[in-house]
Length: 337
Ligand code: HEC
Ligand SMILES: [Cu+2]
Image 1 (cartoon, rainbow, N blue to C red):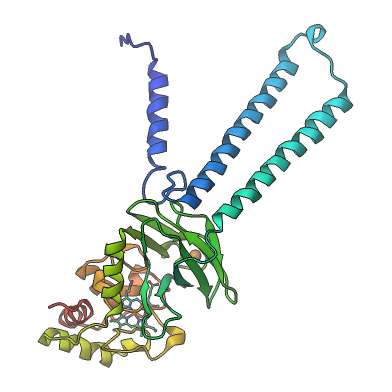
Image 2 (cartoon, rainbow, N blue to C red):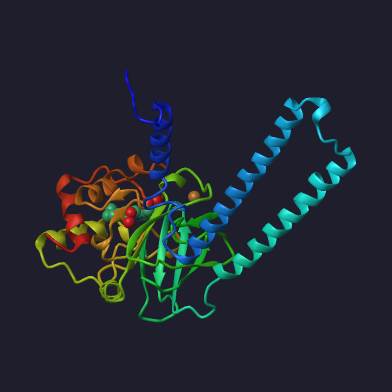
């Protein structure tokens, strides 16, 4: 095959492969595509370490090649003890100390404002995320699941809680990773510079459905965020259609409120064993720990076959509910016919 381009086929194939790999680094869950100040700082440290390590590797390889291929009589001799002290002690001590100082200094800037305007409590559970707004304000607070809304350009302090095992909260585009520990409240700050949707994922193995324990951070302009808050804070209206009323009866007959609340209509009775707050579930983008798009079909599937979707999850399956009953439940939960 004739090829008159100055770049060889293999080079071009190499460039194409590299670009394809880098394209995978963009997107909704990547620490190489920072979308907020903390993530930008972390990406910066990563690049400094990566480039520094690459340069040091190059230096060591050059010295090794020099030692192997340079004719012995032409080598510049260096005494062994000098080489060890310079290359083995002084050089690592200086570079690693510099890296430590830089790392500790950067950590300060990840801590954020000591008096943040927005505090959100997030509880890591096997295997989903409970999200509370204004938890300390009686009457104003509300809970949602697997979805965190923040206004653009605002530092949101995330307080992390767990009552079961250790999880880890990670939204790579926005901030570093923080462990979620039983009996201890860790916190971190997330901030998005622009509107967008960023995926987060539990980053500490926490049992069978750890892989299906994701969530989304939705950064919105202030007015949209305020409208979202107001809409979430309002309780659900009582069902108006026959279908909705039937759904509520099925919800009660099956003791769904053992674990779930539909604020305004049904309160959860067992807070120790609770599942996601189902108030305004129709407003969420995803179900099942951020792993399924929120459609009516998926909503019904989760109720009928939660164990097929997330085996081992703490949501019992309800295989005996008829198609009709599932439709009525969905209608009740979504607040629409
Ligand atoms: C023993 C407690 C328990 C009972 C009883 C229960 N659920 Fe659940 N439910 C859960 C848990 C826990 C989850 C979260 C599962 C996961 O994603 O890991 C869940 C998830 C769900 C979801 C998906 C929510 C989301 O955001 O992903 C729906 C919808 C739901 N349950 C409806 C029902 C209905 C309707 C009933 C009654 C027919 C019911 N549940 C009974 C514990 C329960
Ligand atoms: Cu996990």
